[in-house]
Image (cartoon, rainbow, N blue to C red; front, side, top):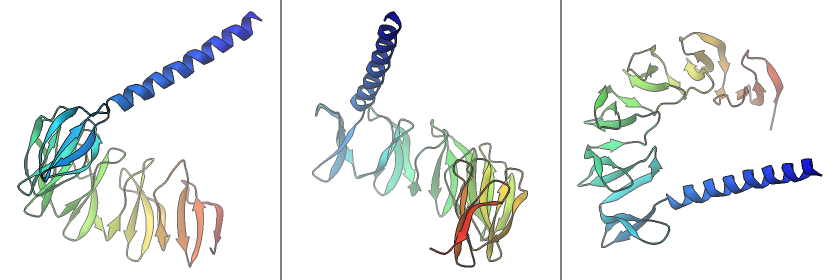
Length: 226
């Protein structure tokens, strides 16, 4: 009987803690509002936290920062409305892994949360960091950099997708395969279309048939036509 009561008490404590955590997250959420063409934020109680003063806001708060626009230029503010990174960029994306991609004069690079440019704006295109790597484009081809800006995989590929679970899809010629973080083609480029890995499997297409492969490139299901 005591054991049953103890189990019940522990379960109640877990449920209570989970509910409290959820309420805490909700209470910290901010909601976008617009007045006279300007954008600001209110909290869950309707209190104005950030007075409407921005021309636009893109996306939600990510890693405590939100993209805001003034005079056709983008920067970042925190949840109190402090403009931590000035609105000087022609384009910008959400923070990921402590870095955000930004663009000026058609060239992309990365800034940290203080606004310091940690990876120079040298790339023709770039994507946000995923699994510690970001895909970047130079000379019409895609490669990858790490968070220090080191070109760990040179721009060799016609197309690519994000790293997930240590592997990234890359397009070599007309076919897709997968490289690891050392740039080795660990799954041969033999597929017409692919998706990033998720929980150890990736969806691929070959000759109009779709299936799932494991990290060794072995089909665990399919390929079959839809």
